[in-house]
Amino acid sequence: MKEAENVFFFKQKTAYELLRSLVCSEMCIRDRVIIGVFQIGLPYVFFAYGTKHVSALEAVLIPVLEPILNPVWVFLLMGEKPGRFALLGGFIVLLAIVGRGVILTLKTKKNPPA
Image (tube, rainbow, N blue to C red; front, side):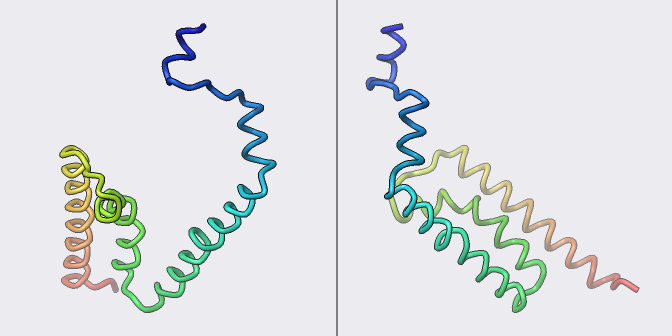
């Protein structure tokens, strides 16, 4: 068992130690409130308000592109370079999303619904 503890080069915390640090810390509760309000709550309010002012295609593309663009934001702000497979995968997903949206938009303009 000694070898398994040394794999990570630090002493592993027990579940009880992790639970106490996650639940009982005032800083942790404060951070959860800040994240819940400012990082999760307000963006959804702004997004819901903004969807009234954009097309349906734009409203769908924004939440779909956000997780794909996360590596770009990390690169720009933190300097961490994504691998070539991450870039290739992101490019394929972006191409598929935009291509599908454009094709559906063109089909809808040619054949408007009755």
